Image (cartoon, rainbow, N blue to C red; front, side):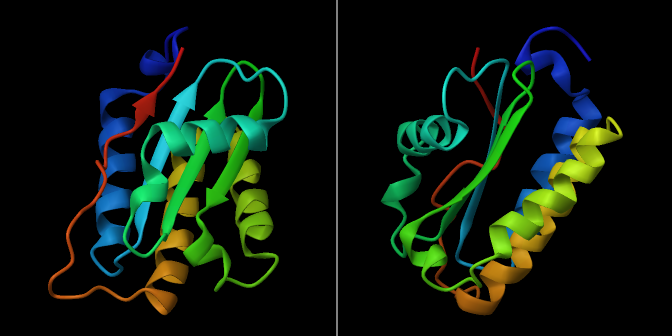
Length: 147
């Protein structure tokens, strides 16, 4: 694990996170992204919303994108769902998912925490936005990195 966000995860961890995204998206038309950067000045949800827009996540056809946002050095984390998914999931879903992920983070298990959260989000997305035979992967599955 390096000092910059892009070097934080090992190659194997990056691949495992990407595979979790791909596996989750095999069963849903929803789109999941992970964004990692070092610092977040200000409110974490505001920053996550900025990243959400920058990554084009609000452009999905059914507005069913989910962003897992991590600011490593600032120790901030957020999950942000788009309008379509937020209208469907139970009110406490994102908060309960976030709590499960943070339990892993507290143990230093960042990749494992993200993988569990991605898996949970995928199951929830599947319930409301099942995979369609004409589904197109609208967003990249790789982790995106900031400074």
